[in-house]
Length: 252
Image (cartoon, rainbow, N blue to C red; front, side):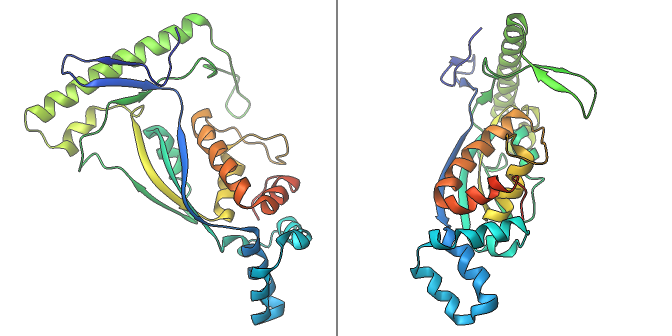
């Protein structure tokens, strides 16, 4: 049974319930460049002359960026900012907000608005079966029957939960109370602001990569968010991004 992000149905309460298998990440604002790393680093030896780095090509100093990354001089990577608008299931945000240092969040509120009926259903590429013991397990492909069951049960549950939510709202129950019946597969949205150092720490834990010295085993859905954030950052700070990968994807 195939599920696509655009799939939707009409509930008895005439609310269009829709199902998505993809997350979205939009870079809405940034002040981030490789030169930010260089002037921050050179102030220690050049003082006010470090401002000259703003007018120079950072390519000429990529060796310094690599040195800072390799020897884990981390503070020069903090003088930049990126703000992302992220749409993902609530369970992704609950994992996301375990990252607290160097991050700021503002998420849509179920207290102040009626939540939209958009829910997560895994796509066909999502591995469904966990095997092995904790610390040594792996995920493998599910059978066609398991994918059909997962999609059908999720969709039925989502429809029933959202109908209950609407019923409570119609009866005058406060939004902050009625939202308790909604599952964590509900899509939410938030702004997340970070710097390159905090993003590198996030990526080191929430993505798998062949160049990573320390293996990570993230849940696929938060990794999908991380991959999109990484792609935006790689365009903004290509030298820093290259040094991150060359030094084992360990945040300095």
